[in-house]
Length: 493
Image 1 (spheres, helix red, strand yellow):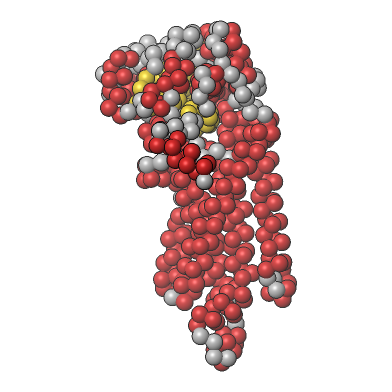
Image 2: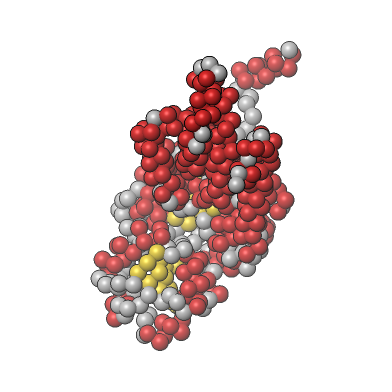
């Protein structure tokens, strides 16, 4: 009782537990490093902090900032002006800060370097073709251009660049940024978009084409943060500002090279902060810590979405089995949902729900689980021999009793097979949840791709595959326990 009264007194006095500050990074090495620096500085200032890595792109992480799922993340001034605020007139930090304030977002001063968009080629290929500027590309309309998906759709990317330089290339396609670099190295790609602080400019000896018509704006690195963080955790905002002006372009390129050389981003960030004399605390996750956290996140996504799908799809399947016309319509709708690509569905759910992270991931996995459970429930119920139904009716069982005591037990092998299929599919599909901040094994996979780290990719891929096998085996055990031997699907000849 005394403990309860103490809690009430503390709550009344406003002494609530400190809120964890959430820092996010996009799906690239540089923002991962910058976010890790921020997290270490905030932790060193005494505030609890969490670094959520590997968000798929600017729209997802910006949405998370606005909804409060994220408190701060590294961004670039050109991206803020053109992609987020859609106002090319916002040329300086003061103008950006004034435009962001009504949205509840604050902005630090520049961290000291710009990471501008540019076009790049392999150096020997550029010499061979005689290309030194973007304008020179007009003389090579058969060149193979491969750009990142974000660059393909941004106003300050390919659409605007094409108009500005009057480029008429036909062989243009979207491609993962890291895979485009590999294509350049292998000679399968002629030109790609790059960032001027990318490690690959140095490691792959790339030629950066001069922006001779001054198309690309300046992309000064900054931190954006929720303005209410100044009230909730002022020490966190002060920590972010400690990095203002501390990073130049040469230093950032060097850090990116180290991260792409498979050094742990947390260790790279910690060494830079130490060299700058910035007091910080590095509490980098170990591989075991990362595995434990990602397993918990992955199981939550799969378990919660599957449970919801069972609660909806099985009753709907019973109804569909008894109403053939409506049942066909339900199966049709579930089938259409199943054909929507996973990435497209996640992208659609973000604006529809106004959320990022676990919620849209759960909704997507729930929708993908409906069809196999629904279809197998309908199939199992419709496959019951008519003589068994007639026998149940002859015994005088009412409809509800017939359903629970006869029909569902007879259909249980088929229903369990549908649930089993949905569960295994969900384990694999859940890896995409990392792109919108839901975590899970996909986080290691996406980070490994960006850092060109095969070991990190396998940290996510192998547990995901093993979990799928474990889930499949678990349902095989369930079937043996829950389904009478004579009704099991494997015993039917």
